[in-house]
Image (cartoon, rainbow, N blue to C red):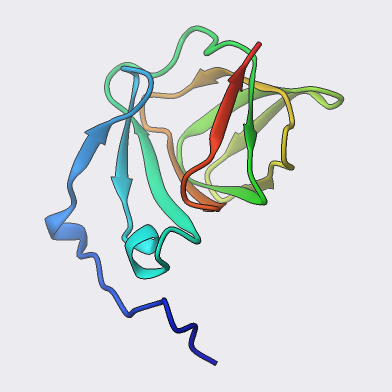
Length: 127
């Protein structure tokens, strides 16, 4: 059953546009899901802009109904409250519950992550 406010969309890889994110180390490629679902869902690829992430981004959390990541390339190490340090590599997937305090500790220069969220726009709390 098609949602009334959703529409079909295709985003071509050869026409990808990358924009800088909240931190200068990352850039984002919007996959068009926000537009297709009228901001209900979001999906983008996060990649490193240079030599990887060699320092912490600081503890923070996101207010979401759903947030998952799939590692497309490289590797990353995160701190998750209640879980400790977790390393993920190409092919790994993780779900990040609403409000989970976390910190990106390291990302290789070839790290790329697919992030899917509900809603598309969400609040970030910094600690």
